[in-house]
Image (tube, rainbow, N blue to C red):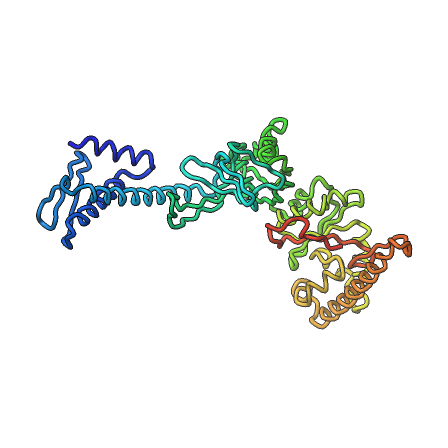
Length: 438
C-alpha cells in the first residue's frame, strides 16, 4: 500500500481546495506524459492509480511497464505536467467558488494600493476594487480589512508567473451592496420578514431604501433602524457616513411618492400615467426640503418610485390650472366637468396636454377627435409661447449682475418654476451631470 502517495494526494486536494479524484486523474495524465517522453513510442499508455491502496499499474499497449525505470528527465516532465494541471484545476475550483459568491459580501485585507484600483487579498486569491467602485471620499491603508460585494468574476487564461487567471472585481458603490448589508445587520431582512422593494443610491452621499413587512406585527422601518438607531448606524458606518433614508413601501404610487420625498411634507400629488409623471405640490417653505441639496432628494425619489417627478408650489399649481381652464374655453369645450377629469388624469398644465396628445383625450375623456385635436393644438401653442417668454426672461435675467434688472422669475408655465427630475436616468450618472429643469 502506497500510503505516502495517498497522503500527498489528500494534502494537495485539501490545500488547493481541489477534488481528490481530480488530483488522481491529473497525476495519471502526468505519468502518461512522462512515459511517452521516455519510450518515445506512438503506442497507447495506460496508467491507473488505485484510489484505496495507492498502487500504480502501467501498460504500454498490452505490456506492463515499470515507472521506476523512466529516469530523471521523464520524472521532471511528469512534475511539470502535474504542476500545470493542478494550477488549472485550482483555477477552475476558484472560479466556480467565486461565481457562486457573486452578489454576496466578502471580507478581505488591502494588499496593494494603486491609483486605478485597490488590491484586496481574499485568502484563496486576490480581488480588485476599481476606483469607479470605491465610495467617493474613502481612503484605504495597507492591511486594512474591508467588506465589498463580489461584482464580477472573469476567467482569463493563466498567465506567466503562477497567476491563477481569475479576475475578481469588487464593488462598494453597488446598490446590491446596501441590500446585502441590510441582510447582515437586520435579521428580519435575511429571514424574508422584511422585504426591500426598491432602492436608489448615490454612493457616498445618500440612499433611499423602500421596505415592507410581511408580518403585521413587525414594523419594517423600526426594525431596519433598530433600537436607538443601532442597526442603521452600523450600515452607515460601513458606508463611510453615507445617509440612508428608510422609506415605507406602499403599492399606491401616490403614497409611495409622498413617503419617498420625506422629510418634505407634500400637499398634493397628481399622477399622469400617460407620461409616467407625478406632479407634486409642496408649500414654498417645503420646496428646498423636497428638492434636496443639488436636487438629490427628488432625484433619488424619482429613481426609487420609477416616476418622473415635477415639484411645484400651490401658487404655481393654481396658475397652471387657471391657464388650462382658459385653453379649454378657447377650444370651445363647454363640459364643466372636463377640467376636473383632466386633472384626475394628471394633466395640470398646458404642457402636459401638449405632451399627452390626442388619443388619450379621446379614449379617456370621450372627446371627439376634432375636439381633442383643437385642444391639444391650443395648449401646444400656449406652451410654446410660455417657453419663448421663459427664454427671453432668462436672457434678461443675465443682466441682473450689471444692475439692469432687480429680479426676474420664469418657467415653462409662465412665472412658475417647475422642478423636474426623470426616473429614466442612467444610475451611474452623478448628481452634477443631472441638471434640474427650471
